Length: 277
Image (cartoon, rainbow, N blue to C red; front, side, top):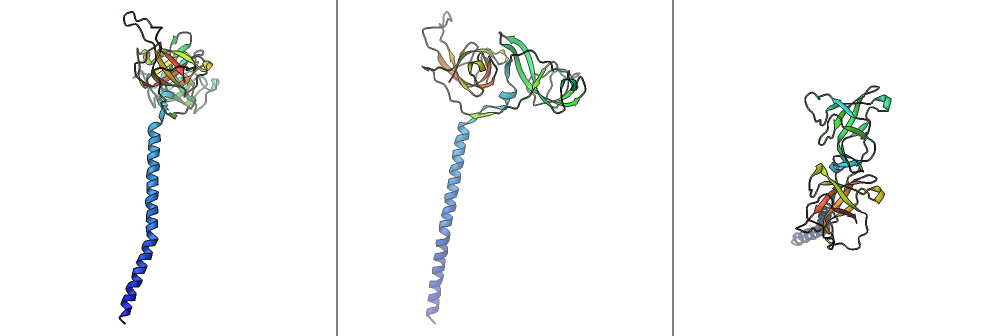
């Protein structure tokens, strides 16, 4: 009778040992899985930190470009609230000078552009100002609602067919101050957004090379400056160009392109050289 408690105690000990042996590996596996998940999240965070939208929606739909063709026929001729304001924004109703007779359809979306002066012999300076969504039609006129407006959208603005474009996730690959043997297409900055004297990171500029020179959207270009004599301000031809910035192409035409400055160590001004990598 005295042996029974001892055997019972031994039995309990063995059961506890077996249960512990069964659960410990599972717990270790859970800890290991959690560690792997945390490590995976850290790696994803590193990638996200290094890669970002080098071309964002605002670059695609609110920037500037050179309109190289004849002026469009489709325009905004009036606005529902034209009696109380000059510039229009989201949900405002505007009237167009074309209708079903010209092929317009309910639901069509157009890019609204403000077209200004000519830039050299390249074409007209054009600023993207938003979208117009056709909501009502008659034979010779239409009604549209403004969407995703940006900047100066007024009566007289032109409408172009809207094309959906993709943002670009990537990295600023930077630039070298001095680079030898670079053979990419070379051009010049001919216009800065809003006719500024200088721009920095995030600013837009027009360059005088485009599709004909092999330029493509998403391509990164180095921006160079020349050293000038501090007294005469003449270019020192005996000194090499210095890389001062990096840019990405956000819009391209046949002979021109629009670039966004990604990074720079000095002011970006008109007349500086750009070169493809």
